[in-house]
Image (cartoon, rainbow, N blue to C red; front, side, top):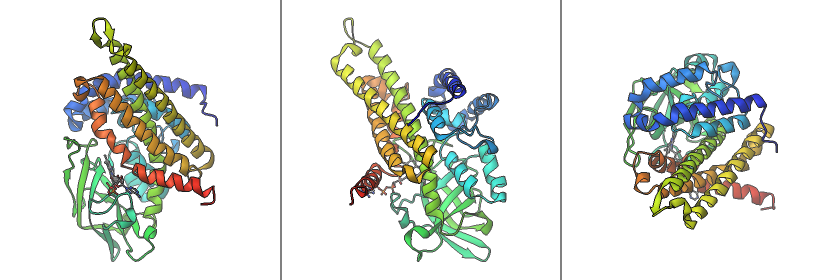
Length: 397
Ligand SMILES: Cc1cc2nc3c(=O)[nH]c(=O)nc-3n(C[C@H](O)[C@H](O)[C@H](O)COP(=O)(O)OP(=O)(O)OC[C@H]3O[C@@H](n4cnc5c(N)ncnc54)[C@H](O)[C@@H]3O)c2cc1C
């Protein structure tokens, strides 16, 4: 394995790091308190600065207007962006749009690329991905109920979705719906491009998450589709190809999330160190002088470094041998990094005492919102089972 990157990439990485540290981190608490909608003008201005520096959409292929980084190079950039809650958004690399760009790039027709993909890559619009349903297990999407019936040249969609991140304010949704309930389980569903102003598409609410419903990109929408009619030209990919496409979408998405989580770990770790060094506990003694604090710090450090190496290994394997060859590495990284992040954020919050529970640091936001890392894009258990089975296969079981 070779995790080295070219010298010019290294210089760019340092410049991006400085931009995040100097322009994003100091504004984070105020932007979060104001909410996404109220912060959009400032975020838009930051996006202009990123575009002017040639850093826009780092993971998107150059022919579409992105930076076209390899996954390994993007792993390092993704970690730096992950240090700020707004890093990925300001650089045009945020979920779920980044995954939707990949889907449209791979499966979109000429018309779909012009109408949906290009404005999305340019950051002129946002999108959402609506697969999960309250009534069926998201961890097993072969159970989906949302239906898409053919009616002449159109499809008519009926269903109930939730946790569609960023649905509030999105121009369109990519909706997973069952086109043939009698087909083999993995060939039942199809993806559709549904503009959010289509009659019959209704965002019911932003689902409150640990006390906050959020808004705009910082929210998760519940959606009801009632007799929602879209022309056949809005089908994304082949009929019955939804699961295969979703799996391919989730592959890079999981690695992107892992990189971001390592960035969150580093930010939380840094805050924890600063707090330990500055907080007086008794007389001249600081929190950092306590052996228990030192031991916790060492455990966090070791686990963050291990997490980063797992992510880099997965990214390197994908770059060298493709996604199918990296399935085990992706699963191992997905559950391990999510667990490490949860524990590091928890330790950092604990070290801050009451301050950690307040919104004066990003730790409480991480604690509430990044806990979901162990659930979305495949819960821990599903990835452990999948990796376990692959390992045992090599041992004849
Ligand atoms: C913050 C957040 C953002 C999200 N964004 C999106 C989005 O943009 N679009 C979208 O479509 N969905 C999104 N989701 C939904 C997410 O993909 C689902 O929550 C996830 O797939 C799990 O599905 P579920 O919630 O229905 O849980 P279930 O499938 O009901 O699973 C519940 C629990 O059961 C356990 N479990 C499941 N399977 C197994 C197994 N085989 N063995 C042992 N235990 C198991 C796990 O502990 C799991 O957490 C988001 C969720 C969250 C929390």
